[in-house]
Length: 84
Image 1 (cartoon, rainbow, N blue to C red):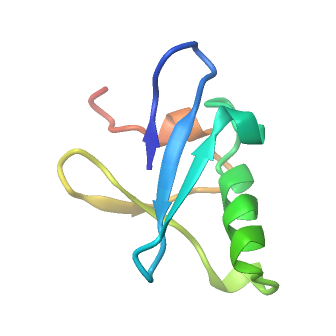
Image 2: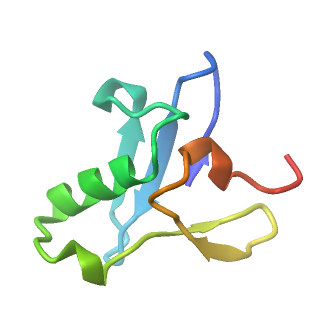
């Protein structure tokens, strides 16, 4: 989901939508590594014009190709691979 680079709070991430489009998310959109994952969910839901958000979520894939659900209550930096 996210690539961590540069400054401690710089963020860059891509969300792959089901129709194969990519939604790029960056620090310029107000997202930081310390932000809660709910910030990304809000941006994605807004982009897709989803009103009933309780029925949707996001998954991320780690370096071992294992998937897990994004926990909206956790910071983005906490969704990294456990071994990093």
